[in-house]
Image (cartoon, rainbow, N blue to C red; front, side, top):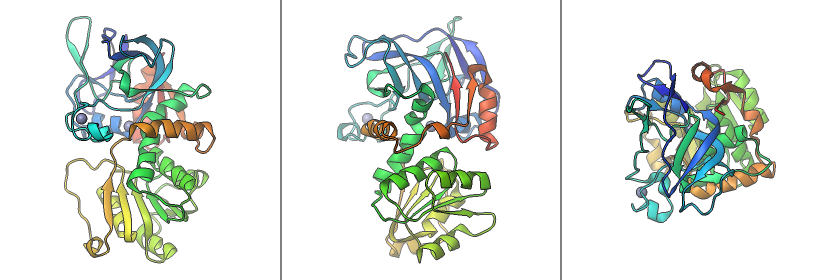
Length: 351
Ligand SMILES: [Zn+2]
Ligand SMILES: [Zn+2]
């Protein structure tokens, strides 16, 4: 099978030939139709996330089941599925309390083999490939009417935003909300805020096109941060700060800004990955203001089903999130477009 292999950070991926992965009794083999190109993949290419070279990126996988292990009775060959959960140990305190997104002893996915016998690791699940094998607990059936491209992004960016709004921000109807960063995650956060009854929904970015898109997904007010200070403007619009603020970039400065723009008793949720580096909070006011600062790790298993139901019912928009699809051998172009801010969401097609 073909797969896009990363040998070194900041180098293009190379399309190479690998053996089709083994399928154990607990596993399913997916013939990949579409795999989203997520910012997390880009961070690995840029060397900001660690990896074991050579490796295969890609984790927003949608495809058709080609083989089903003996102990995966819930599925049959031909089922259309996405990968919605990550590997889990199944025994730590988080796995035992349905918080497997926080698993402490997450196993590494088995490596793949090249025809010459050398091995290639998989970062997350290794979705930039013609076939992917994963345990059956990681896959979810796609609603019949939903195209593969739309379903694929539910596997990461859409459901991560849902987790942020529902579980981490604990949004309540009437809460005022702020979202800094109107890329894929930010637009999804905005559309879930609309579904959950937030008002106002203030969107911040430095690109006017992205702010226009934010309005279509439900933002009631927009701020271009190159023109107006987003913290001062948000405080002005909401008489002192929002109930719930979200950072959807993974940037230390904007992470601090959402904390400064949150009202006493509110919650600031950082969705973008900040890595392990230090990060400065410019005012300790959050302590006596009882502001909660929290983060987001992927999603809980039932979030995937809930998001599929909402998409089926037309409560959220998936199609217009996807700005471009790429053939599998255009994967480097997709990553470059993402890096240069040309994409809302891009999808690579594999079969
Ligand atoms: Zn992702
Ligand atoms: Zn675990």
